[in-house]
Image 1 (cartoon, rainbow, N blue to C red):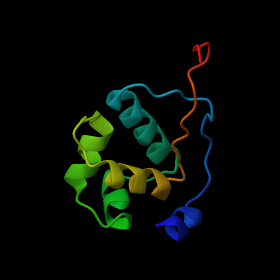
Image 2: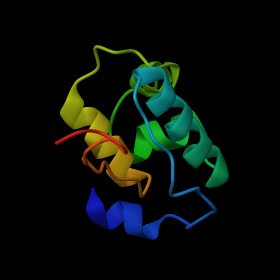
Image 3: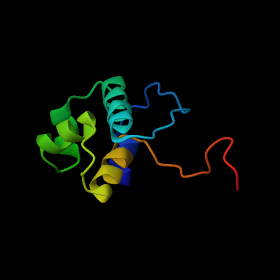
Length: 90
């Protein structure tokens, strides 16, 4: 899927989004998809998945398969970065 993500237009996306809930992740995915001018059906087809998965992802369904979610993020040119919380004690 990495090569498909490179073919998408870049679009503007705030690199500073912190996601702590599945709903916030869904909102970020929806914003990126819309910034790219794509429909849910477009992404489903490009990601070889069903439209229902995309709808559930954008709604923040917490029980989606992690690898499928990561694959969709990659397709949209997004990535997950794991780091200590700002101000967290070590």
